[in-house]
Length: 172
Image (cartoon, rainbow, N blue to C red; front, side, top):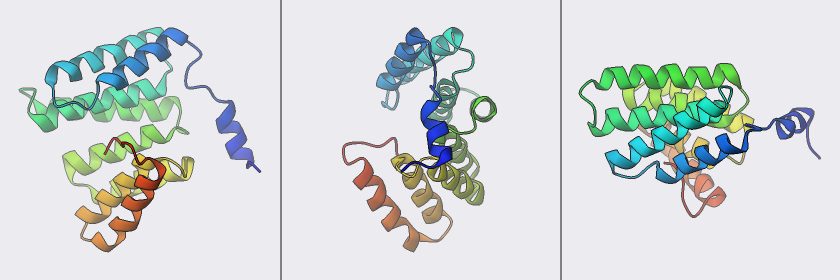
């Protein structure tokens, strides 16, 4: 039995542009490596997806994460500019479609790992989980935010839940 909200979420396509979707998934395939070159390839794919569908919120959220990788891994000369760009893209994703958990996850991730803003990260992770109770990265982010905020006792059950939901791999 689906709630009215769940029914609405199921009818919303992230994009109806097949080429944009293809580039988005290519970007995901490259993202998360320890390579600056693959991060750049991922960014190019997300940018192309956005060119093909300027309303593709997930592509904006994912693009934001490539900028965070640049800043966190020291791949750019101005990490603050990368962080600023990441915030802008994450907020743009939310303004396009505030019902996708990935956009809230991305904003929380930025708050946690670039600014140490635990409470904002917790709030964003909870919103991502509220939107999709089966979103493993939301639980992993919430776990990390609690851990870094001095509440490690809340972390382990959240990590276990994330691993149960996605035992193979998680963004985090």
